[in-house]
Image 1 (cartoon, rainbow, N blue to C red):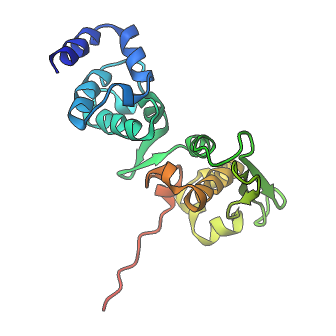
Image 2 (image 1 turned 60 degrees about the vertical axis):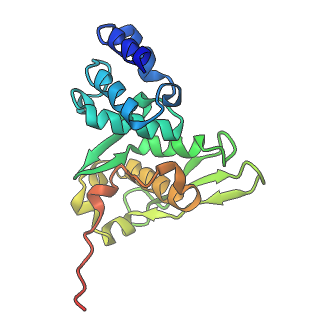
Image 3 (image 1 turned 90 degrees about the horizontal axis):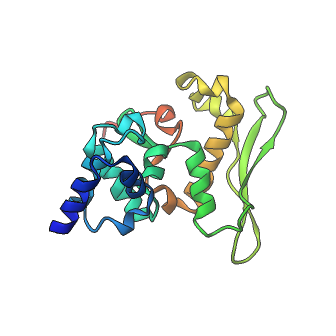
Length: 205
């Protein structure tokens, strides 16, 4: 334990060494949350991490812990995980990358498929992929502008109006992941979901 603390102290003022630590798989450097927090305190002082994690060791510790469980680098988590309304959310790009990297689907087969005409309520998107073990094609649920309007997403998130094609692809990726590989999201929302979620109505018994 003493050696670990010495190593962490040594990299505190060494941005090159710190960069190496942040970018290597967390499983190589974290054994428990206590050690993760000590590492997070060092990481939180780095200039190379996203601004929303700087000087926030608690947030960095959560990112390190998630990275450890996922087998990826803490930097990957910090670059793609942010907080909306108090809820962590994966970026849309990260969701697709997590699907592609889960090993269930043939490399290069995961892609968004658009349907309907642009500018109409029938415009939509779904994610398609090919199972790695059987070679069968699989298609996720369709997401359309009509659905987005019915769910009230357009009024809650201006991105649905400003960049509908991108939001369709992000939501299609989220739906696909929740149906076919929910474990990759680790229970976390995907970009746009936290803003669009409608509070559940209280039912009086």
